[in-house]
Image (tube, rainbow, N blue to C red; front, side):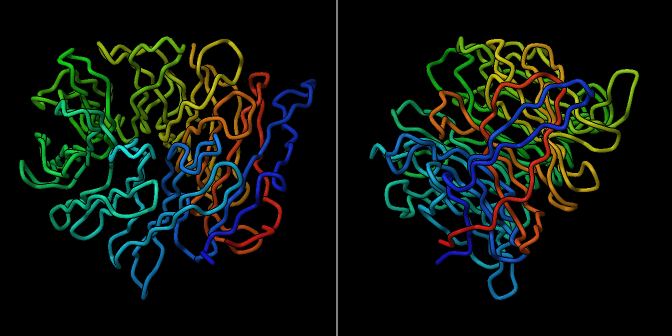
Length: 444
């Protein structure tokens, strides 16, 4: 028995009535496919989420959930639970060493070892820091990586494609408090998927930039036949003080190919970031980036925003804003085409909204307009702290959205939760409240 309770899909499908913004709006619905709870108090289950790919061969995406505060002997060891997308069953569970906050970052980097099973990547940034690559076939450790004490090595992790041209996918790890270039300037390292050796690295340029807060593999934008990678630098000062930046690098030379900066002091662009936001399905290189300090033009301050930018030139294509002043919306996902216009839409999380209840806003990938709002259930849920797009798990032909609530304390006393939603097309402007799930029927 593990410390994760789940409501299987055939029991947890719940149709939610929308709370309309206008009195004459017609009632509509959205479906909760899966609700998962942790029964380990204070473990912050749902802090990190990632699509793992199909591990069990049932045609549904499985996913990783990080719980970095899972306690062992009173110390935050952390753990990661890998759930089946087809019903929530636990496929694997991994536990960190005391004092490491294992599970602060999770990723599905693809099939690294070539056995036809996608593998699993976990970061543990506290203390000396570390990252571990696990086999998606049997859960055995493939590689372990270690950083410098206090550097937050493993704060961000991802697969980054084939950097060295050996036909094997490689790995990228962020270390935002590394002091090699300057205090807390940060560093990013690239490791071989063949033997775990260091292939290259790039350091931040200025103290307290926190270069490497986010990392993501990227397409081959310099046409040298090898993959690139992109780095979030939320306290970079190139645009303005702490305006932040996102920087694209060559996987071969580690030279900067593209830099996108925030516009105003405190934007913190790059706090969250993900390459591969293919809006129209045409394969064009886009990336999504969170800007938690963004202001609404001629409006509220520190509302937060999601941006979609061109991967080739960095041009701003779409901006979708968050909810209210001081709520710092900044976690971003690109789940599905919510409004049926042929363009993938964005999800923008604001976990501190509504006094810590948390909210997720769905915004148009075409023009950034508000499409719908999803609200958490209770104070201190921190609903929307993590977002992950999952491939279709309910057979409707559309991707689904996993949302983490790591501060969650529901009526049964469970400290963290994750819900998976089927995003049914909706009329713009509607508001949904994600309710307390039914009492779990099984504990696995």
